[in-house]
Image (cartoon, rainbow, N blue to C red; front, side):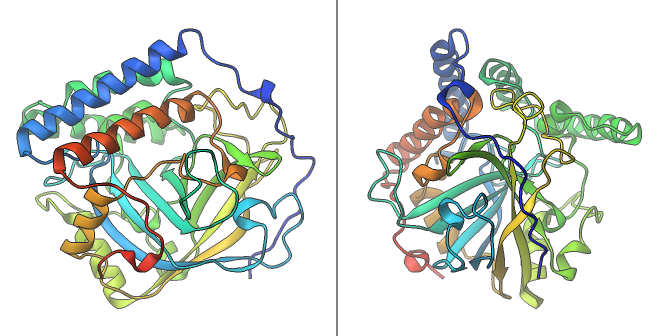
Length: 369
């Protein structure tokens, strides 16, 4: 059983902790237009509309989330307010890439948790029963705000039509550069976002929200970390996927074909707005001021993690967004605000071009087995 540490003096949310950027509306419009360009380009190539920047799934897992007993009041909030099991949910693992038929070696990885939860919701999602957590394998975002993110996204969009051989060479160069940075004790969010992610097993990764959200009356970031021995053994484990277009997918299928796994859901409460800013997403909040604390466990039994029917249902019939959430976990900050319009555009583009409506599931059994 994980040790539960009572948090010290978490900061209460006040509207003043969020500050709109200058010309934020113009930036958001440009971001949506850039993502639309990516979506349109890939649709023109394949004739099938895909998610703009994390299109390729590697595993689709079904499991249960159990909220831990004995959480102190500051941690017993929203989704985690009451101990016990939540209804069955699911989590896809994917890469930030544009072509699901090919794996972008070293692309940053995402894990998305989706759990049924009928509590008070944000306006516009009242009929939904899901809580989405969009998580990435790094504690900080690759840009401080929406304006800087727009610059990075334009660079990424410029690679959409790059010749495959040149793109692979570029990814190899960025991985080498990232290795040098890490050897010196650092990590470059820009390099990893552009393809500098080392070739390691995806199931050993810890995934982070990177950007803050409400946590009841407080402010927090969320992480999901592997804790079962079979998963922790894969942390930083090399995985050679060269010449294997679906190498990560095959590794996930092989693992869950023989064993299950467990992850902890951890929360980092904001205790100092200067050291733990809301509007600068590039800052990793210092854990010496506020450690990540376990609030729940996700258990996934052995299973077939890949089904063509289930993948099609998820890729074409579902939309994931941090704004699919309880009111107690409303996204915060510039990056989260711009995600709302961008994710809505992506979902509408896929629905219109694939001629398939997108709707939220009511139960974990709404998807094909």
